[in-house]
Length: 418
Image (cartoon, rainbow, N blue to C red):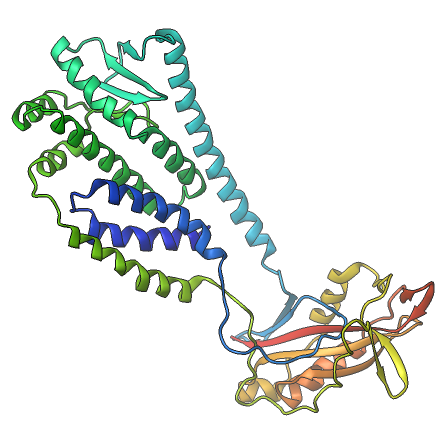
């Protein structure tokens, strides 16, 4: 959702600076709707950058373990996902906000439905109401008009709102309200919402003027219908005080030329920059400049062979029943994190990086054949080998065809300095 928010902000900046003053209302409306849809799709695209380091696959890969040396000299360690508590709190806050906005949308919609049921009928698409501080609005294929209006005013309001219905603006409003439920924390989505409603009014005004109404008479009607509030947030208000000035200006503005569409090409570099900055990228772990050269691991097994053979010993990569560690993977990672020390020499030299350790679980459950697949520094590699070698025996070995067999495992341990 944060990535979606960034894309929405990028699209809105393009609209605000380049497109909002053009009189191409249909283009601007399409741009806003496609921008919102694209903002939810683009973060899902993975960008491949560079070549990943070539580490053959050797059995089950555990989650990453982080070992961090803090500024006060103490060491904090924990498996990947140590921030789950914070993430859980953020998730609860997000869902609470989404729930509040969902309830608001549902209540607004129910008010509209109840008003339609009380005042409307299948034959009559014009519903007259009283007691609401608005001249009129349109929704669900109907036009709602205030009874206080004179017949002349009501006729113009109906004509205006019919333009909203003809262009299916109510569907746009429902769509962006749903987006606002998902992006309630994002202030830019509220600006987009206001921009879309403004375009709707421009299009409705344009439709009325094209039908033969003089600009002066139509502007006089708008000035007579300046109201202080809106009732239904999911509907189109006939007149909004903050829009009156803009609408009157746009009515007399010179039509934008076709060349104005060339501004849309600015979308390409802006979105490309955002994608490179925050889009999902494949994890390509390049060795550090001071990375230690380690002996190349044995070649991976041929395709379709789920085991390796080294020095005449067969060790399996995948078996029917994987070994079981007491307490599960979380307990194993916790043991590694709590028993790993940041080497003093490495701290003094400012050395950090990810060490990938390979080990096997033998038929008796004991850990054996602890080696380095990707090294960083002799001291960090040595500490990673030490702690993995002290792992307690697994409670159950790997089982294949009913027999215990040795199984390969890999665990990444990342050493970082603060």
